[in-house]
Length: 447
Image (cartoon, rainbow, N blue to C red; front, side, top):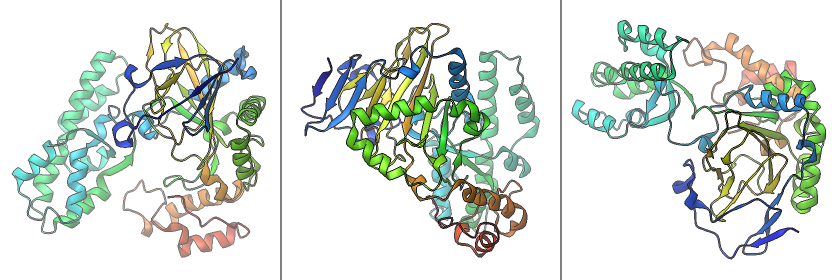
C-alpha cells in the first residue's frame, strides 16, 4: 500500500538563508522509507517515492557496478555551486578572499581613487572568507609579488606524496599565508602609488584572476551537456565518450527510469518528452527518453540547493547504488519538512528545481561504505543547440581563434580563444560559412 502525505502548509525557506548551507536534524520531521506520494497543499502531486522500484539497479552485476563507480569518479567537479557548499575550504592556497574581490571590484569602478593605506587594510581585513575566484600564482610570481625563496620550497614540499595528511595540511596552511601576501604587496606597491588606480585595478583583475570554482567534489556527468562560457559548444561529456560501450550498455536502466517516471507522473513526463524529442541530435537525449543528462555523485553530501539549470517546469528522478553500511545520507526537502532514505534501486521522482533540497551527513559508516547517487534531468538549453557535428564546429573555432586571432585575447599566454561577443564576430561568421554553412543555430550563446 502506498502512503499518502497531504501537506497542509510549506515552511518558508528563503534562498539567501538556506542555499549553500548543510542540513541539520532540525530541518525535517520524519524520514520516509516506504512507498509514498506527497501532495502540496493545493493537491498537486509533487514527490513520488518507491522502494526498490528500479529493477535494473537491484542486484546488478559486478561489471555494471564497476562501470558506475568509475563513471562517478572519472572526472571530479569544482562547479557544483550551492550544492558544494558556500563555506569554501578547498583550493584555498590559490583563492582570493571575498574582501580582495570586493576591493578589486570597487577599485575598477573608481571608488578608491582617494583610498588610504589604513582604509585599504581595514577593508581587506573585514572579510577574509574565501571567494569562489582563484588567482594565478604564475602571474603574481612573474610580477615579483611573492617571495620565491620562501614560497618555492613550500610548493615543492606540498607536492611530496610521502607526507601524512596532517603534515600536508600544515604545509598547505603555510603556503596559504606566504602566497597570500601578494595581494597586500600589490596594494601598497602598485595600486596606491598608481597615477591611474582604475587602470591598475582593471589590469590586475585581467592578469591575476583565474577561473571561478567551488569546493571540489566527487560529482560527474554522463549524457549530453549544453554550451557554457568556458566550453561554448554542446557535447557528450568526456566520461560518456571515454567508455561509450559502458554508457550505451546502460540504456535499459535509463529507459526503465523513464518508464517509471511516465507511470507515476504521466503529465510531467509528457511535458518533458514532447519538449526534448525534437532536439537537433538524438544523442542529446538518453535513448529516446525525457532526459538528457545524468549527474552521478560518489559519497558526495550535497548542501542545500535548487537545480536551476534544468528544464523549466521539469522533474528529476533520483536513485542510488549502495554498498557497506551507514546511517543517514537521505535527501531532505526542508520546505516540506520531509527526508527520504534513498538506497539501492529506490525511485524518487519530483520537483527538485522548485524546492530546496540537500543531504544528511553519512554517519556510522563502515570502511567500505559507498553511496553512488543518480540524478536524471533535462538540460533546458539543449533544445536550442545544433546537432553534434555542427556544435563541434564551435569547438574547432575556439582552437582556431586561439592560434589565429590572438589580438582578441586577454594577453595571457594561456588564452584559450574565447572573447566577449565572439559568436557574432566577423571572424566567426567567416569560419562558419566555410566549415559549417548548413548550421542554423550556431550563433546562439548560452549566458
